[in-house]
Length: 335
View 1 (cartoon, rainbow, N blue to C red):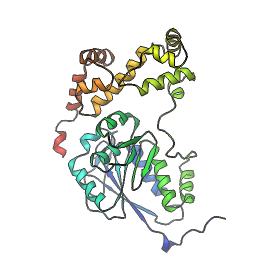
View 2: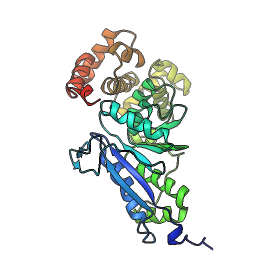
View 3: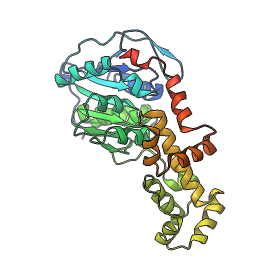
View 4: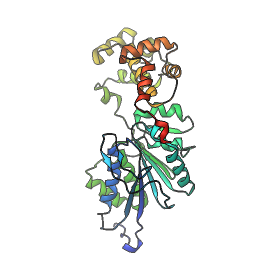
């Protein structure tokens, strides 16, 4: 027999503060917000309220260019409120001193603070994740681990650690909000909201962000998947194809035939593409020097790194870094 619902007088309205950073991702924000809206229909009670804020109270453009009108700027909030940082592109530049100072001030009050998509970067930069576990969108995983070595980063779709919580972006904010809802107000309302969203498979902190390797590459070959997983886990210190082949009980020639058949490239070429993709992420998302990026991706020689990078992306690492800076002129002026 289900537990009786609380009376209207016993229901406490929970307030969420959504902080929109420039170029935030629309899907995680709108999904989280609509979860609260739908929950208010559960028994026609105002269980959740929300306020949308920006750094200066002006409309904010998300990553697809749509502008969202906000309710106010960075004003004081109460300890009972929950802050949700909505991040997206160029998160380092958009995590300004003004934003971080406001977050630190509110954190000292004991406010619960969460990050959607790349919002975890802002939280870590403000020191709010020291000694905590978190997650971030898989595309930002490499840059995050390089910059915040003391933060325990997970590949889960979302992570809740005390009064700090993060989700990886996309639809993972729905799973996070449902979990918070179930914890704070009961599983009945969370399951009802999930049904309203046609969300038939609620993910947990044990679920990872990315598709499995066989699904991702479209090939279900156990030895091939194992080798690719080994490659992805050994970017800084690459393992030779002969060792990879030996570890899965194959000859080097058999491994080469396997890659040629299913991926139309050699193991060496596939491995190089993985390393260069990580290098590009680090160049685009961090302030690491080109030399340090090269070392982090297994290149002992900067000249060899530059040659391989040019062959893959038709530009040099230095020009890539320069084009990134030109896309963010005067970024420091936002501090």
